[in-house]
Length: 126
Image 1 (tube, rainbow, N blue to C red):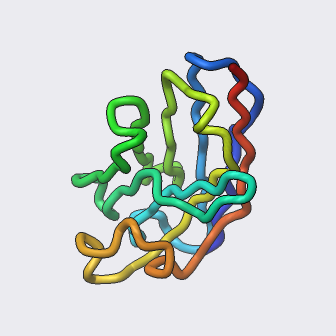
Image 2: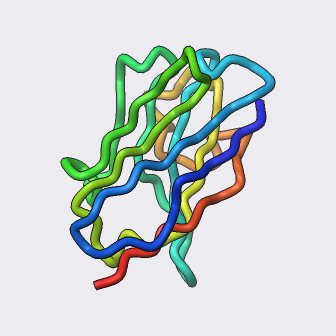
């Protein structure tokens, strides 16, 4: 599967932004999808994830209540709705796909994902 993240940009603190992860090659309904981010000089970190049928979602504590992951299997797209953005949310955001059977145990582990899309930069000014 190929993934392409988009929707990043420059926003002010408190604003909202919606990122999209478009997939091609195979239907996104075959994959668990995760969003990760990497700030300049820092390691990549988990943000949010969605099981393949969309019935279960996971969030990092630092985005819980502000970010929402959703998917449209009909459009082969997974979204990350971000609200109440903070300067510390500034990073390159990546989406990734996996079919691992143990997803509930490893959704926040970047090494669990076999396919990664190009990132999209989100910059939040104070």
